[in-house]
Image 1 (spheres, rainbow, N blue to C red):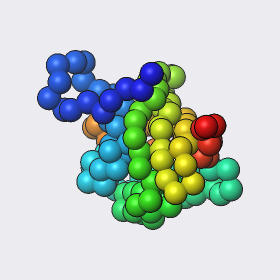
Image 2: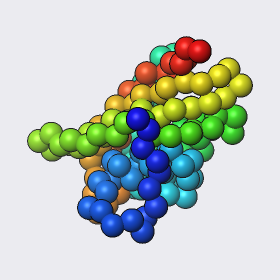
Image 3: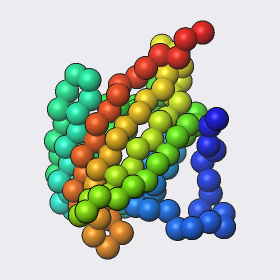
Image 4: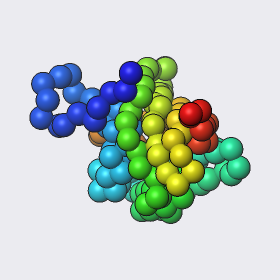
Length: 136
């Protein structure tokens, strides 16, 4: 069952920085994503075909996340799953997104490990499943 994107005004517990990141990504909200990252940020990611690195919020958001991974042709329709957890000294958020593009309907899952300082992410590692086609 998919989870709709929630508005910031709904009554609920404050979202973790990781959940804020996942929801900003799902909304393709460039300003919110950038605001969640320190400058500089220690960013690395692994997708099925490439290892990514960046140090500036603009690079992370414009050149990687919304420039390559989820570009203008990718419609993120829903957050299918969203889970937060903590480790000693590190936070984790995982999420699944339903994405539609010219190639059809897909599910994309990402595992994100991060450290936050003052409500902003300073260290970020992302592992991505890639676009998995939904049959039918």
